[in-house]
Length: 176
Image (cartoon, rainbow, N blue to C red; front, side, top):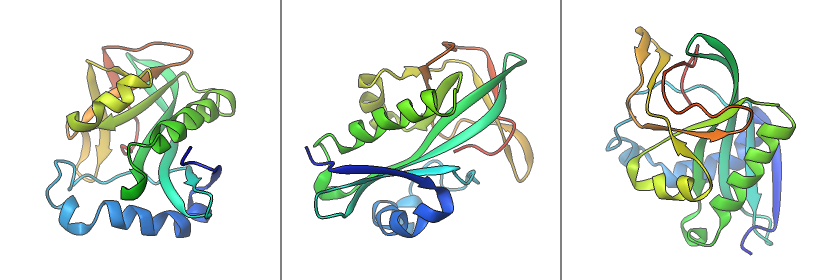
């Protein structure tokens, strides 16, 4: 296995270790080509860092905890964002291992009603293989111009206490 150790840290504590990987995976040149390049994102609550046996960060993901609304009902969401794997560690199970651990954290520690992430179609197969399901409804988020419908990338949910598949999901804040 490529992942030797996983640590979950407060966002600002984990940032110095995460930053080099995130900057390598999403350089400003790459971000300029992406459909979500102009989105203002939420700061994560936690960062999950996966290390190899040389104690190098090979995978990162952000965890965002959010009180939101689904069809007018208050819900607690465990959001996943900022998934990035070092190029030489891809297709070896690092992201899958990190995602499974993040879901465990969201479910057991934070007692979320469901998980939520946003991804581009080219990455969807990874998340679907891990049990994530497409959310076919509308998602609303806050942006500098106010409350807007979010369609920069596709929403996927992970069933925990509830299994939302459609309807109106209001994140009551910035997306992640």
